Image (cartoon, one colour):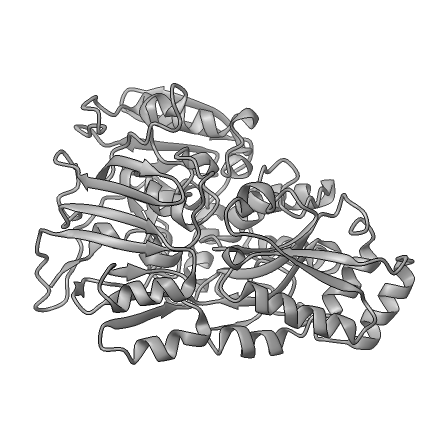
Length: 525
């Protein structure tokens, strides 16, 4: 008879929309997971050579190389070039061992053992060891690191090295731990990055040779790459092009070979161009307006509800996404997640309810300032204008402050009390809740600090009964929907575009640019 954790994993499998998911439960019962070689389509034989140029939006001069502080597309992509995590989540929702060549757990999911791959070298020529992996986890568990992975590391009580293995002991069992450890902040560094988190020395496909934040990054192929089934380019350049029109022009003119963050309003037109192919995929990414619940006037839930009822989600999806996405519901979770609560009522645009809650809030009628920039998400400025118009109909004095792209992610997001933002989503609910809604999470960008929500997140993490776990997630969703600081009007497709000479592309719902692996897995025709 299966134990509770194994039954939970079977249930997660069933909810993954027919994906194989989570190694078929093998890890939960102590079986070892191994990495398989990629399968290429007929006639697709990878060729080596050339320098891939990526034109990317979402970069600024304040960007650092520390993977713990990566908070926008360019630093995310930069770190993907030079670094590896212990595991990855594949496009079809499976766990793929990487720096950990195999892993196992005990019966209740409280002790996890990750067997670290041997013979892997860092870019500086030193050997990567299990201690480097353990130190990486320890650094991101330290609140002083300001790591975006801090929330997901909170449940780990002990990290130790036993030979070539890293053994992690959790306070409560967690069947999702491998998914959590795929987080891109947890890039393995020498001594965990304690010596120099910005050194950009890793075990990844490409070695960093120059960095000019907000402008350009250059890489060369890692000659000692441990994985022979990746890295077909001689080098990679990431060119920061924050203007969406300029990015599209750069692709069509051949100045770059790939671009991210296509404006949905021009995606269909761009796809008609003989020089470009638009690649879009639905997933868990969402565009949001975030309110700090600990700062006036957003510390008043009636005001938060007034703003939530004052946004026309369907209009925004139609006009901003042009069909490349779906309606949101003031929660970071949609039906793409396992254990989604399908009973949560969809919030609709309701002028009368917006007026009612605005009156109950007792707000003095002064302007409510929403800060926005083009870099917040494609179409963010237009979305803010639509929000302003729909709020005006309810008598809510919403004003828009447009600011420059450069410095937005360091000076506005997670700093100012009301702004536009986006989330790429996470493979499982626990990772999303732990990263952005746990009170101790450094990326709790709505400042929604609730001990009852914290308790529910931690309880769900350790709950082995599928029905009970889904019920706990439903409670979290309901609280965040009704009382949280996130206004989520829409879930977006990831929309990238590539030149006609790029081969090997595969859609990846985990994040843009093939989950950040486009340069590692594609090649020139």
